Structure formats: C-alpha cells, structure tokens
Amino acid sequence: MGTEHFPGYDVVDRAGTWDPVTRHVVLGRVGPPGPLRFFTDDEVRVAGALLHALLALDEGRPVPVLELIDTRLADDETDGWRHDDLPHDADAWRRSLQLLDDDARDRWQRRFDELTDRQRHELLEDIRTADRWGGLPAAHLWNLWMRYACAAFYSHPDAWSEMGFGGPAYPVGYANLGLDRREHWEVTEQDAIDPEPWAHRVERAWKRHRGDEP
Image (cartoon, rainbow, N blue to C red; front, side, top):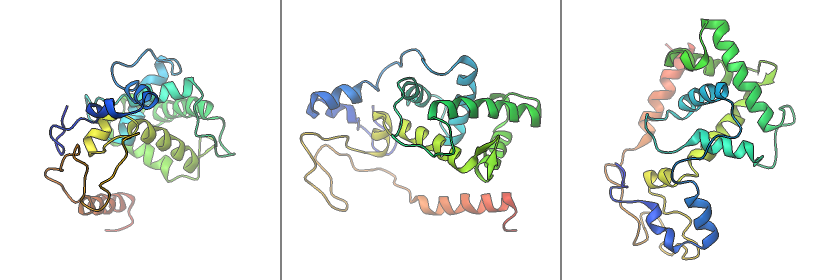
C-alpha cells in the first residue's frame, strides 16, 4: 500500500504475526464492506455528508467509516455507556440525522447532503456551540457523533498505515520503546510537518468567523 508519510508501509503485512482472533477482527475491516443493515437510504445520504464534514474525509478515502458505524449500530455495539439525557445510541443517530435534514430544509430549502460546504459547516458549528438543538443536548450529541466517527476511522488498518502505527503486535509485542525508537518493521516518517502552527491558524480563523477577534 504505502502512504505519503510512510512510503512502502502497510500494517496488514504484519497480519501473520498476530494471534488468530486479532487477525480475524482486524482483517474483517479490510475489503469491500457488506450491505448496510441499519441506515435507511435517506439516512445514508445525510450520514455520509455529516461524516465527510466531521472528519474532512478526502474523496476516495478507503476507510469505510459509514459502513463501520452502520455495523456497530446494527449489532448494538455501544461503548457500554451513554449520556442519560440522550436516547439509546441507535435512536439518537436516527433522530439527529432526521433533524439535520429538517434544519437544512428550514434554512436553505435544501437537503443536508445538498448544502454547500460552507452551509454545512455553518449548521454544524451552530449545533456544536448550542446548548440544545432539536430538543437534544447539543454537546452530548456532538460527543456521540465524534466518538463513533473517530472510533470507526481509527479502527481501520489503512488509517494505521497512514499514521505509521505498527498495529496490535500481539503476541510479538513491542520491545524498542522510547522517543524516536522503532521496531525493525516500522518505517521512518518522511516530510514530517509540525501540526501546531496549522492548528493555531485554524483556531484563529474560527475565532474570526465567530467574531471573537478582529
């Protein structure tokens, strides 16, 4: 596979060193996803646009975030807890996706997936900074979306390869621990960029957008 920052590296090449259970679980996330079992067609178009905005997903990115979330919800694989002011995770997802579509139609007379990137981000930022939205606690709903989105994305081997993560390494384990030390199978990052200056620019841009600074 190989990635821009870790050329020639593919964590799946290490699958032969994993125990059978780990190998079955991880490799089950690779390859064409099966048919959706939870989301309806209408929910798919809204959820797809939502996840694209939340994770800034590139077109053609191989990580099937929506399909992984669909599987979790269909199998009722929750985190084992939920905010007591939110409904069950599956119900919260269905209700919030409908609310996103309704809110988009009320504001712009367009479906959520038909909004421009600017309109979609404006709506999502209003939700993120609200106290309540559509009768739901906005902060807790935002937390639900991000937990599922990030868990799905970072559970996939392609995401691991992209950031140079060595995978489960079980039962082999990691022995070369420490700053700037790596195992013999790990690849040195190329063209590493410090993300902090970029993060500061983004934060300043959001503050200007909200009117917090000139």
